Image 1 (cartoon, protein in one colour):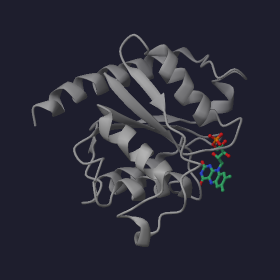
Image 2 (cartoon, protein in one colour; image 1 turned 90 degrees about the vertical axis):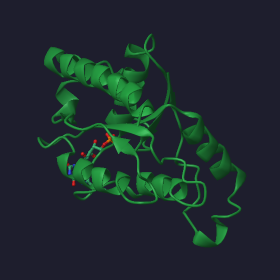
Image 3 (tube, rainbow, N blue to C red; image 1 turned 90 degrees about the horizontal axis):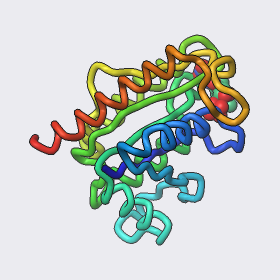
Amino acid sequence: MKFVALVGSIRKESYNKKLAKYIKIRYQEKAEIDILPIENLPLFNQDEEENPPAVVEDFKQKVADSDGLIFVTPEYNHSVPGVLKNAIDWCSRVDKVMVKKPAMIAGGSIGVLGTARAQMHLRQILNSPGVSALTLPGNEVFIGGIQNKMDDDGILSDESTIEFIDNVMNNFIDWVDKTKRL
Ligand code: FNR
């Protein structure tokens, strides 16, 4: 299986970036996970949606070629960071490359809520007509206090968090199989 991961933080030392890398390495036997850069995508402009810049075309092609989407995102002001929304907006127009793609969501924050509000918004966005991704039901990965559960190299140290993510990843892989029959 080949997944793409989109990370909602573009800062160098991002916990969510580190979490995406951790997931990529931990589950490498089960899936190839390509963490796609989104910071180089220009701001979405409807005037350009029919003929977008090459960087957008390349990004959309990678999404289209994948078997599923893994979103790993912080919460900004109780919602989804603009850089991630921008990437999704490009994918939602003309060739709608996220339609029927299975998707899972994870996120970590310094506060206790572990990006719960951002993830609620993200689920709504992924369910919009132009996006129509098939979000994994019944599974949510909220990592509150992530600074205490991950070391500087991005290795999760909290056993219960690791067990939880293992379980969700297995459910996601089953979900990807199931959605092929939809
Ligand atoms: C935040 N942060 C934050 N945290 C939270 O739990 N709820 C929120 O609404 C916000 N809002 C918010 C807005 C902006 C603009 C910033 C920069 C930060 C804090 C956030 O959880 C923290 O900075 C994380 O470390 C960001 O994730 P990365 O960059 O480490 O992946």
